[in-house]
Length: 312
Image (tube, rainbow, N blue to C red; front, side, top):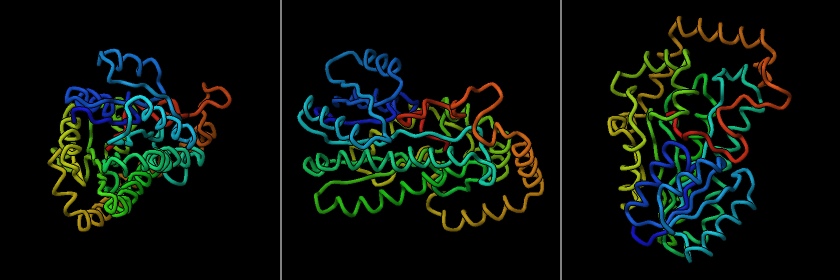
């Protein structure tokens, strides 16, 4: 990676910052994009030399991403790798019938269209450099997304996006890969996903304990580093999820059947929907303590960056 230039969105999240440190240690030039300016400055300062450029594009703004890529090229002379890693998750987790419609669309806007805009802005440079694109998906691309549907939908969509991109880039001798994190120890996993009773019940009902056990972001970063260097089409972290990925066509429908047949989970979902229906503030995305226009989401919604991009 020495001398290569890497653009990372969602750079201040758990996975993004860990990957930034790993790539910097291997000699890469880094363009770090994020919406939390204090955290971004702290990360750049900790890396400690002139091989780091900080950016604050909003991934919902195509022109902002075009400008960000132009700044990267001005600073480093080109762009070899783009890691589209920014993402958000809905908070609180809710069923499709009760989630705030704006919240559903916002998650898809950031997690899918934000990836599309990031990659599209970088593509001319990636093609010219015969470079590599890496996109963060999730094991939610193929496990059941009940109570977390916009996140699962967006992560499945970016997987399909990269499959198409991989074929289209081949004519330019460039490559594309997908990162599938399982449960990773990050703030978003803990605050948005990991501590929700319904999601915890489903995880414990379906997945053996080794699959549900989280790994640290540093583990993901080591695999990402190797995956980028080897232009891997798929990076599955932790490795114990690899058999699930290989057997997803069988295990996916089986998991759906198990979840749909669990009376206790069904009762919990009905209870969750009833509670949301009785609380217009939650359904609209605003609780009783939230002021007008205050979104119920884990991190700054503008710009599409949370504390992490994994859920799984």
